[in-house]
Length: 445
Ligand code: NDP
Ligand code: 2IT
Image (cartoon, rainbow, N blue to C red):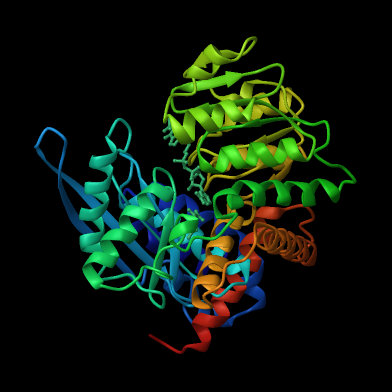
């Protein structure tokens, strides 16, 4: 390891003790940059690694709201603006009890390079809260979102920071946040939030974009081996926004989705998952995935089990970070898995990635494969700014083209540095170079 890289990672650990996820995300990117550090001495001379791994701003705030029993509840809100080198901070917000600064920092850091890969002029940010939407009434979710935006509205804006959804935050929550923004500022929330319902200025195909984009990326990858998703058995973890539309597109392209999951366990369906049931359970009823087995003859629910133990040729982790560990990678390999495409952010542990790569499995990192969501968010910003509404097909065509470009960029840099099929390397280098150039061009600040 170069001494600059070593020093940068040591400093990072010293400055961020007990932020293991943030360190994991930075280490993966920095290790990919090793060959560039020798070739481009300006990276060290301009302290790019130090600057790129320290957030420009980190906002933490108290969120106080009243539950249905009339009790006062206190949560913590976060918004990290990591890098505005390429544009306003852009990234989702996560509402989940596991949220803490470490989680938001790792996600915001990943977002810098993902957003750079889209080529759409957006910086990297992320936010959220330890609020748990599960089991909360609609009124409670609304009051929480109103309280959250009452603090956040000072910091967002179309040229500064544009939040969107992530785990636990979908169109319902974005609607409540937009409503409160409007109430406080007397301005329409156009351009300040993305992932809005279509009636509030949202983009068609935003809901589908992350999942569809991951499958478009998978199709591009398989095509490099003269292969396709047609007839492939697939497993998809999670059953939220990303997982559902990933599974839909797999089926549209002729693949068969054998298993899906949530945090309680997974369902396996030998006839292939019926997505109308999953969508009704998750988008309408907000029910648990175990209910699927009650509605579909021949399927089975496995409590607290992951989808990785079922035979498949292609696996799509679409739930959460570090959900695919070394033993899961071993199970996938034993069962004949040929490709892993990350719909979620950092779902595969470094040990699992190393094993999959060593065995020749195609592996797509989230910052490339799940960039479709944020890309269509940027298209939503374009539509809002131009007071336009594009058709589903127009947005979907742009999404397809963007995913193909990201794929090409990954392959280009992997080949350039003789790291054929190393999409982790290709994505990190392609994403980094644009940001590094911008940071340098601005001068020191
Ligand atoms: P949702 O809230 O819609 O769904 C999340 C799914 O993952 C649920 O099935 C949930 O199960 C499961 N899950 C969440 N946390 C855990 C956990 N700790 N252990 C096990 N299962 C868990 O979120 P999204 O689909 O939007 O997000 C999924 C992933 O994709 C995240 O990593 C997110 O960062 C990433 N992503 C999202 C994008 C978007 O546009 N929404 C864009 C790019 C990436 P349960 O309901 O039981 O908690
Ligand atoms: O991780 C992600 O890219 C997202 N949650 C989507 C961010 C966005 O701004 O649409």
